[in-house]
Length: 238
Image (tube, rainbow, N blue to C red; front, side, top):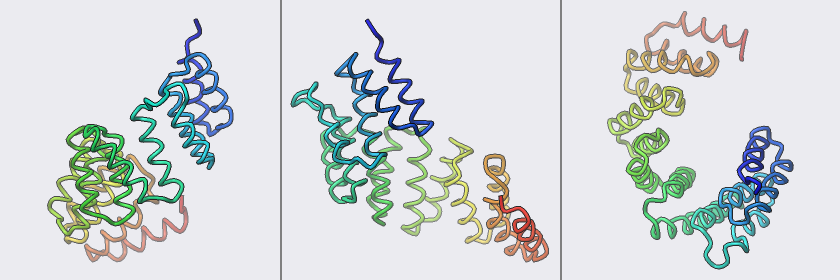
């Protein structure tokens, strides 16, 4: 028998290359071989969503092969597609129903944290982040969401702890790094800001750190250094 994992792998490669029509063709080949291949159905819905074909994507989340027993993962995809269609409240309500059904559904908690962040619902974001940290303590994104929520809830010490943990787990997690630099500069702690800048510098471009380096130089009342960084940025903005 043919192995459905081969065209599915090819579909994922096409997605990385943003060759989405080719990816759809490969996914369809996988589903001919195995009509109940969950990952293929999920990827098909995701691709259709990325192409802006949202109604088709939603329909793809309820394939006939599963009858009335639609897997949780496809119901989660259908719920999140609502957000992509502009119905963030509907997506949030649908995802909340799914985590009520299965509290260990980490994927849904991640989407709920992102939706809460976008909506400015800081406590909801924190609640979702705490669930992510419970289910996936080594995932830096959960700690990042928690740190961001703590910061917006005016809890800088808690924010620092969560963001430092995120950066420890993933030194290339720039959201955590940039936010920690901002917190250190706001607290007028240049040594702490410089430590984070030095830690994340190998993982990003000099231009992306330029504004933080300028802020640090101004905090240290080193205007010549701030001017030097600004001039270098003007010469080479990349």
